[in-house]
Amino acid sequence: MRLSFEVGEREKHQVEFRWEKFLGVAKIWVDGELIQKSRPLALQELLQASRLSSVMGSASYVAGVMNGSSRPELITGWSFEVGNHERHVVYIQKERPQILAALRAHTYRVFVDDDYVQKYVG
Image 1 (spheres, rainbow, N blue to C red):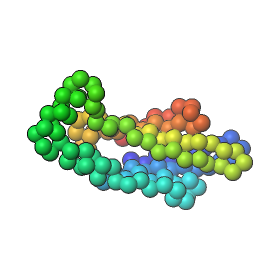
Image 2: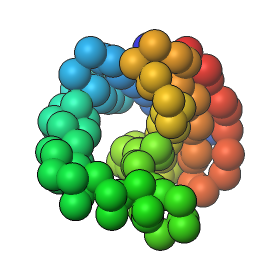
Image 3: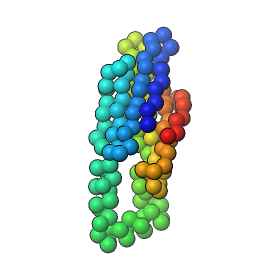
Image 4: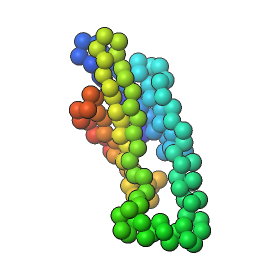
């Protein structure tokens, strides 16, 4: 998934976000300069799944999901600042589906200074 948007009124900055679904890596550029690259989320999900490898781990996880005390992490996000004289805090949030996430569209939301700006699905 690739999304691009502009931030700022007087001091404009072009933000580009790319999500590489295969390994779960996010990359963020501001004005063509790479400012953030996340660690692969796929590794985090494998670690979470490895905790369930035992029968006891699986049983406690399923019980936690059933009673609402344990949930798979469906939402993640990245925050950064842009601008020199006109500062803005940008937050990009990604929400994945709970089932078959690799095969289904994810929802991306962009916030600037805590204001919801736009939603992308893909």
